[in-house]
Length: 143
Image (cartoon, rainbow, N blue to C red; front, side, top):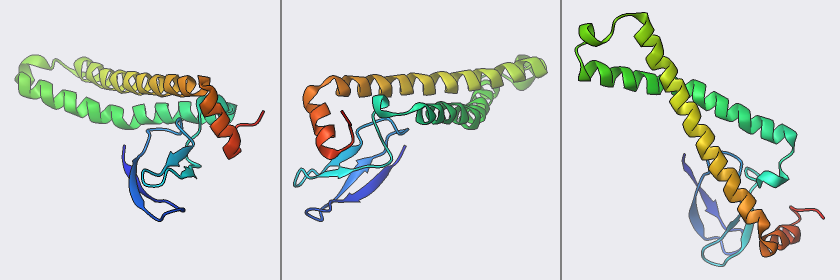
């Protein structure tokens, strides 16, 4: 999660825009100063994604689980080592692997839950007639 600074092409006012975790979201920004719409190539609505984009989104979720799973694992391991003495609580590789698997499962579950929330918000936006008309005017949504 991060942010980027956007300069409005209409009024040249700079403002901060929080980045979504993935490419699911409004495919434009509204300038807070002049309300000018700026297209964003990094995001699109779920309904407008093709199969390849949706597959890419799934792969991002899997990669985040693989990358951040070990971090969760190390944090869980450190917490448990601090909570209990190392000799008493860790009885071999089985417990070590169990904690590792829990880290991957926790991260995967969190990623899936967050993406489902983003997709639901996208579907909710796409139900709005005014929003769909706005996308048509911008040339993003084809009839």
